[in-house]
Length: 430
Image 1 (tube, rainbow, N blue to C red):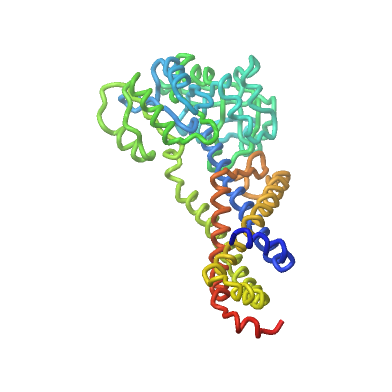
Image 2 (image 1 turned 90 degrees about the vertical axis):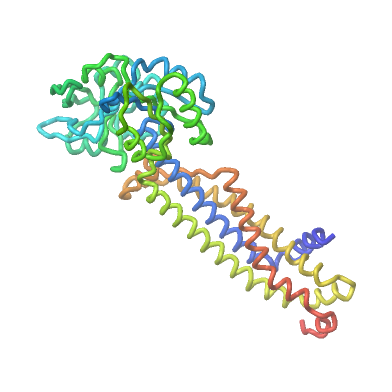
């Protein structure tokens, strides 16, 4: 009965609640935009990191001397591809970890942080959201991709190279000999400095330049389906790898991995790491980003609560005679408190749903704005544009938080309403 009366009062006195409904809707719209934008920013960072660190879960091979290699990687690739639930793709990579790789063109040169040999027949889709200013990864998958290279926009600008130009790549073979190769630029991509200064070539081409068998690999990249728990995926990959090869225990971060690798070993060993473990060293940046996000959300909720508190005080005053009538008809203090609290909760829920629709519309609109000219925006955007990520659990949590905040803000005035005596209410003016 109390819930019915609360809904009926909301409909009958909707004019009184218009301003408070608008405030809640605007507040929840802002919360939706901030939550969606921050979630999208984190998703963009993780997507860039996955390309850089060899997937959401990486399997890296090490020899006793510390050289990265996976002996006979193809059976391991097939094992992981067939045995991992939640894996979108599994492919082998050869990563050149030395720091002497350079690209030359037109009398200029630029050193690369790393060279990545990619099996583009399996990984082309993973490069689909990469921000290419010229060309693309599709050209690397076909026959024309042989002796091709994808370089960053910063490298292309410094070298003066464009799509189709032939650049020279310098590196050192596994035997310590200098080697060079003439590669055709098949794509130029815009990437942030955090995951930049990297060039992508075909896996077989890089192996040949290093003097390795064409089918060799240093890493196996496992990309995850959206929503997959990476820790669980890493544990399952570790279980499968351990059953086939000598595999180290899962490492919490890169420092822990290096510490374990210093131990004496008699043969090749595999190391399985999730993307979260790879990113542990920059976790402070990500944690600070999320802390600022939650702080802003808390401030918005607090502002809404203050507004609700003051508005409900006015509403209770204006409805003094109505409250007195209900008390005179036998409604107890607790029932009056519940009545106003349910009104506030219902109003918060309806207004928040409206705010959610407004927030989603704003996020879609912001997705059409090109942010590429803003410094460092490339770290948080995809192809220069904002993407948003707002899961069902996050949305329900935001709704629950808003309804609870509004209910708590209305609780004080509701208690004041419950303490009004019928005789005093009937003598009140208005």
